[in-house]
Length: 325
Ligand SMILES: O=P(O)(O)O[C@H]1O[C@H](CO)[C@@H](O)[C@H]1O
Ligand SMILES: O=c1cc[nH]c(=O)[nH]1
Image 1 (cartoon, rainbow, N blue to C red):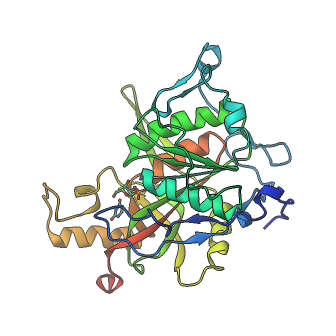
Image 2: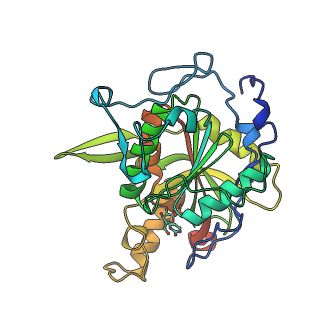
């Protein structure tokens, strides 16, 4: 581990990522305990290079967009966030953002922002924190100090629309050295219910570390490389938290909650219980410890645009350890 730089005073007290705070659970999903991670301990710590252009902390790592058309545009409207470059002063509103935490549900992300507000000991109780995207009901966004908490809905298409606009927002706001963490739920494979999986590799349904984006009528394969040092930092933080089993493992990202994850209780099911078990066991042998629905595109897009990125999910159990024997 490389030597840490001194932390900004506003963040010294940051204790973060409260997955077990009120609002963490969605109706209908049985989930166990979440985790509380120390965000203070994962402040920009390294001078190691990272995609896409080997920038270092000493030189500040900007949030990139990779779209030659954007620069020539008179105005950029972030439709689904209800924000824009002409209607809002994005640098003033968001220029100090250092951490972005995303998750599927609006209530969870609001509860998380309120939790962070208290952890950072900011003025007031944070209960009246406002949804910055209230003008649209697509996504919710809350800001407390340097932490942005954003909902992304379910699945790759939903999170990818949000990420396009979020990344442009961070770029327009001139943010640098931004860490992004998905604090989600997942189905665990061969691990204790309620444990938290910090993803080291996001894989697709074929257990491959890739994200296939259809662009026009081409399939473009993108890397799902994650920030291993951030994953290790988060894991080290988890050691400070009793009673929340935490591990680092591969996360499988599927396009569907039911058939895609081997569920027998969807409206459609064309495979046997044995086939399901065989698939989940093969996933386990490939290093997969949990399943969710966003990690590959999250890794691919954020990695390409210069953010430190890691998905992290608390899990209910899809395949019990005893079934692996
Ligand atoms: O808990 P969130 O963040 O919504 O994520 C998980 O839960 C949803 C399915 O219930 C999928 O989006 C999956 O990735
Ligand atoms: O995608 C998901 C999310 C939560 N739990 C699951 O089993 N799968």
